[in-house]
Amino acid sequence: MSEPIVYAAVWQPVMEAAGYRCQCTGQCGNAHIKGQGRCPREHDHHAGKHRGPVRLIAAPADPLTPPLAAAGLPASGLRAWCPDCQKATRRAAQRAVRSTPDPTQGGLFDL
Image: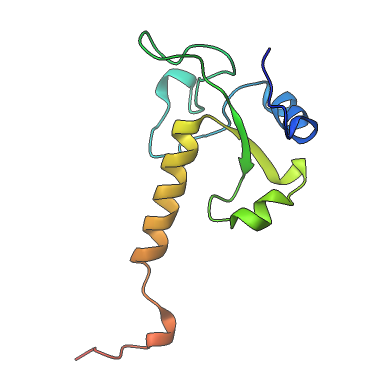
């Protein structure tokens, strides 16, 4: 089984806890029906007929965690993500933040 060279000591416990399967439960916008609500992608298994093997990553459970803070998180603060789910979850969280009105503006332009 392949594993990263750099952060294997942190990556390994995260993957073991996840059963070497992506832990996304729909935060990416996909209902993951084939996986009974959880992403079915597993580490080193092929994602599809025309795609290579999936390499799961250990990334923060909160997709809006800044990179510097994420680098210092312990394994308990990380989840196993396939790259597609992690990217889609981060984008969805960023969209939600942008669409939320800033409370400090306090109705500046309300009529």
